[in-house]
Amino acid sequence: MSRSLFDAQAALGFVAAQTTHIERGVNETVYPDIQYPALVPVDTSAHPFAKSVTYYSSDKFGAAKWINGNADDIPLAGTELAKHETSVHMAGIGYGYGYEEINQAQMLGINLTADDAMAARRAYEEMVDRVALSGDAAKGFSGLINNSAVTAAAVTTGSWAAATEDQILADINSTILAVSSDTQYAAMADTLLLPYAKLNLLATNRLGDTQMTILEFLRRNNTYTAMTGQELTIRAVRGLETAGAAGVNRMVAYRRNPQVLKLHIPMPHRFLPVYQDGPLNFVVPGVFRLGGLDIRRPKEVRYGDGI
Image 1 (tube, rainbow, N blue to C red):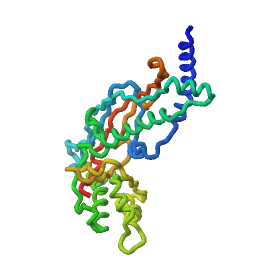
Image 2: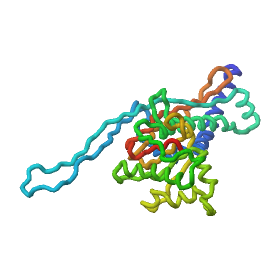
Image 3: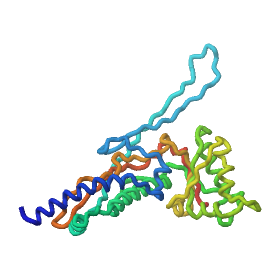
Image 4: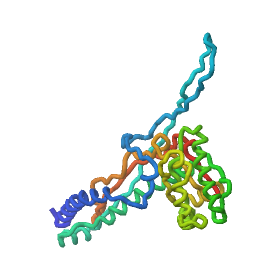
C-alpha cells in the first residue's frame, strides 16, 4: 500500500469520526432569525421520498329551516371535498474539508471546525424560510405573503407615515376582522405580520399624549384580543415591503393553525457519509426534500395592502 493511499484512508476515517460529532451539534443549533418555524406549522410526516403530498379540503353547506310537520322535503346538509396535491422536490447543501486541514488537525490532536457544517445547515434553513414566506416560482410554489388564493384588499387609509394613530389602528383591526367576517365568524386571525419599517413605526411612536406606544396599545386593544382574551401575535417579516399589489407594503392577518396552513418537509436536512472527492478534498453531502406551503383555508388569511 502506498504512503499516499494510507494517508488518504486514515484521513477519511478521521473525518468520518469527526463529522458524526459535528453534525449532531449543528443539527441541534437554533437560528433565532429564521422565521418560518414560528409562523407556519411544519409537517414532516410524509415519506422522505414521497413525490407529492395529497390532502383534501372541505366546505360544509346546508341550513336548517322551518318545515311542515308532514313535509317530505327535509333540508339537507353536506360536505364538499376538494383534492389538492403539493409536489415535493429534492435540494441539497453540504460542506467539505481540505486534505491539508485534516492532516494538520490530526497532527495537532484537535477537532475539525464545525464552521462549514454550520454554514451548510444555515443555508438550508434560509432556503426553507424563503420558500415558506415567498414561495418559489421555478417550482410553482406560493408563500405565506403572496398566495393568489388569499383575498388582498387595499386598506381604508394606508400610507401610515402620514396617517393618524386612530387611522393606523383602524386599518389593522379591519384586516383582522375581515378573517372573521369572511368565515361568518367561525374563525379569527391570531397572527399579524408587518414589514419591518411599519412595525418600527408602531413601536417607536407614542399614542397621543400618553406614555404608551401604538404597538403597546395595539397588543392590548385589538379585535382578536377583544373577542378571545388571548394575545395577538405581531411579527415583522422580510419581503412584505413590496409584496402588495403594484409593489406596495402589505400586512398579513391569519389564523396560525395546521388546518389553515402547513409547510411540508418530508425529509428535513440530513448529512450523508463523507467521501473523498479527488486526491485532496473530502466532501460531506447534505440533502433535503421540500414541498410548498399549503394554505388550505384561504378565507382564514387576509392581506392588507398600501399601509
